[in-house]
Amino acid sequence: MIGNTDAVRLLDSKREDSVFVATMNANNVGFGLPSVTTKEPLDFPISGAMGKASSVGLGLALAQPNRKIMVLDGDGSLLMNLGTLVTLSNKAPKNMYHFLFDNGVYAVTGGQPVPGAGKVDWEDMAKGAGYAAVFSFDNLEDLTTGIDQALATQGPVFIHLAITPEIENTPVAFRPRARRSVQTAFRELPVALGSD
Amino acid sequence: MTTQETVLHPAAIIEELKKNEFTHVVWLPDSETNFMYQLLTNEPTLDLVPVCREGETMAIAAGLWVGGKKPVVLIQNTGIFESGDSIRGLGLDVNQPLVMLVGYRGWSRHGITNDSAARFIEHILHAWGISYYLIETDDDAGRITSALEEAERTSKPVAVLVGTEFGA
Image (cartoon, rainbow over all chains, first blue to last red; front, side, top):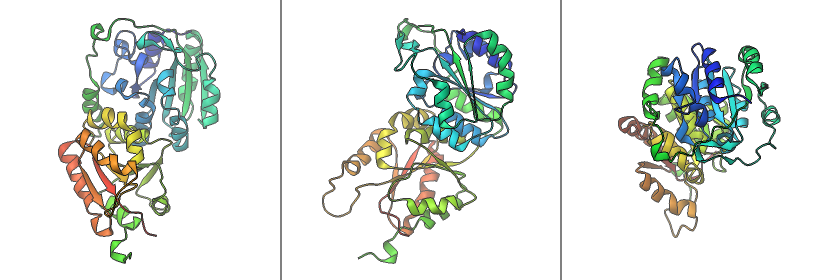
């Protein structure tokens, strides 16, 4: 299993000028992208959009074909919007890298298992949907050595990551708030992309 | 009796989209829009983005918009009901100036409308504070421009209800 922070930190180190469209644990204030990012203006948090990070990422990938778009998705999130796998592979953006942070649980609601946890074969699902390439990593060492090949492969690429669950049981009202809101990101990203 | 003046042709809609320099049509087909599909696939200035479920459309449009493009959504009113959280989270909450062309299934100026898709849609749009325009003939196509102007002026989604089936 891979630690959430370790995975996000490694991807951030490989991002160059990529946009990160991040949701749920991958975007957790304490142990996700906001805690390690080195290029915040190119981070696009979509935590409130219930499974739509890959859809937003598809739009960005089509609008910005010369820039890598990395979607940092969650398994519970993707289950809410499974059709996106086919929608995305049908348009086949070559610059799309869809990372699935698979921890098997709804971590922010107390750790209840997601439907199909341990049974769903995400690699087969992505292959069956028509992604150009599929990778899977279940430890940090392999991810560290394999990430360059994944990012050098023409998209759309699906990268499955087996992530250690980090459960949040603190009442929502007492959790740390994101310093940078979704609305702020919507205002800032077009400036960073030069598309404003 | 249906006359030429009361028909809505998909070409009139597409000309309006081209005039306003829309770049992408994010859509899920419905029974009324087959002729539109045939024209769209042959229109080089509009990139068609087909989806599996309507709630994807506002999210894809959000990414296109932030990336510098001008998308329009084309779905049926039944799809608006399915898309509630996307309209809230990625339309209204982020001030997306999105035009949504919405097939008005069940709409009639005459008699009683029994289709709940028609009976509920305007109430839902009112509840969200989303303005809407009605298109029934080619002469109404200019309301797409009005909707776009309002969407950009208010930084909010605006709906265009397509109240008739397209002619060939």
